[in-house]
Structure formats: structure tokens, C-alpha cells
Length: 342
Image (cartoon, rainbow, N blue to C red; front, side, top):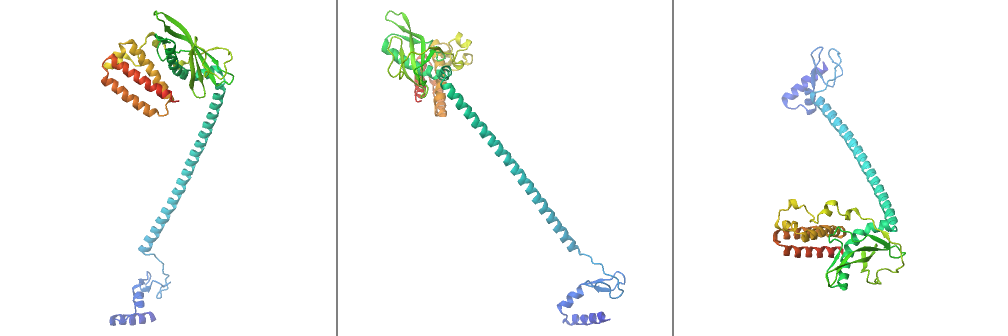
């Protein structure tokens, strides 16, 4: 009854425009009882009319809000889980990389130590040391001997077979007890006398294995130069084992051809080289000098670029033997200069 009176008063105030906002909100928050169908407040625990308990129900907005919160929570949970998983994977990968890098460093250090030990042992063993420097001695000393030959005879001179792959030394000995210098010995030089006859002569070259340079070269009819060795005691002479990379193959021994395959010759210059024994021999020698220059050069890229440019010039411009002879002489001088820098 009190509720009906209050509702009547509120209705009258609403028609007169004097209803308080608080009551207006109360009027709007009404539901019907499911048992007696009377209007009751949403705040009521039971129906004032029949006493039936009021079941609290959520609105659609509340339900949607709960689902949204659950979705946000689930997204945050799985995102965090993925982040933790990714971090764990990153840590594991980083650990594996560090382990691999550490292992590689240890292996490299061990390899470097082994190489130092081998080099230290090799440098005091005559056969090992001489084989290590045979290629350099063969290239450097050949030029030194040719220069020295001009002081002995004005006639023609030959050493070896004329090709770069021809080993001009066959014996070795230590220069002194310090074991820092090796004397390379050969017997394949020929001098032509004034009557046109050829006379064979032996020769020697003192090579410093620290600087990788020859100290002096001389022939058997000349006294040993003072700068050849610190002291010159008589030492046991040992046979030099040929270095495989410096030895001619059977095919190369059969023919004194150029360094390239003549069956694939296309340019005029290549065809002329293949048809001329002198040019073929010069080409083989130049290929060896280039290999030695590449090994000794501190700027291999620049050397190869310059070599490629010179080769292109030859292919375009050299159409006769005279041009090719000049070209080989120029290239030989270039490579010898590069070799002698070190």
C-alpha cells in the first residue's frame, strides 16, 4: 500500500514536471514478478506482493562485457606465453651460436699452434726447408744468374730448358750453422764461346729463408761472393727432391706448348703463339711468373685487374710475332718487379 501511494505521488509529480531525478531513475528500474506479474524494483530481493525470490539476471551489455574481458585476458595470457617461448628460443639459439663460435676459435687456435710447430720443425730441416722455398729460389735465382752471366761472356747463354717449370737446381746444403740460409746448386747452364760451341757450367745461389730473397748467385768459375754466406764452411751436399707443383707433366714434357689449350685458340694472337715454339715457351714461362707474382703480391686484385687489361690489349692489338715478343718482355718485367718487392 505504501508503495502504491508513493507511486501515485511520483506519478502526479511527473505530470506536473516536479519529479526528482532520483525518483525518475527508480521508476525506470522496474521489472515484473514472474509469479504474480506485479511491478517491483530491480533492487528488491523478493516480491513485496507474493514473497517470491527475485533471481538476479545480467543484462546483455554485462554479458558482452564479461566476454570481452575474458577475450582480453586470454589474448594477454597467450601473448605472454609466446613471448616467453620466443625469448627461450632466442636464448637457446644464441647459446648454440656462442658455443659454436667458441669451439671454432679453439680449433683455429689449435690449428695455428700446430702450424707454428710444424713450421718451426720444418725451418731447421734442410730437405723440408728447401722444398718450402724451391719455387721462390727457382724464380729469383734464375734472374740473378742471367744477370751474372753477362759479366762472364758476351756470347749466348742458356740455363735449364728455358721454361719456367724447368727446375734449375738439383742439390742443396746449409750455408752455415745458423740454418737461416740455403745454397741451391745446379749444373744446367750453357755458355756459347766465340767458336759457337757450348760449354756446360755449374752454378749456385744463396737464399735467405727469412727474407725469402736471394743473397747472391755465382758460377763455378767464379769465387763465392762475400755476401753469399756469413761463413763458408764445407757442408754436406744433399739431393733436392723435386716439388710436385714445379715438375712438368708428361704432356708438358712432350710439347713445349703455351699455357693454354691451342685447340681452343680463337684470336690471331693465340694462333700465332701456338704456331711458334719461342712464343709458346715464353707463354709457359709467363704463366709461371704470374703464379709466383700472385703468391707474393700484397694486392692480388689490382694485379689480376692489370693482367686482364694487358691480356685484352694483346688480343686486340697484337697481330704479329714482333708485337707479341714485346708484350711478353713487358709482362715478364712487370711480374718480376712484383715478385722482387718481397
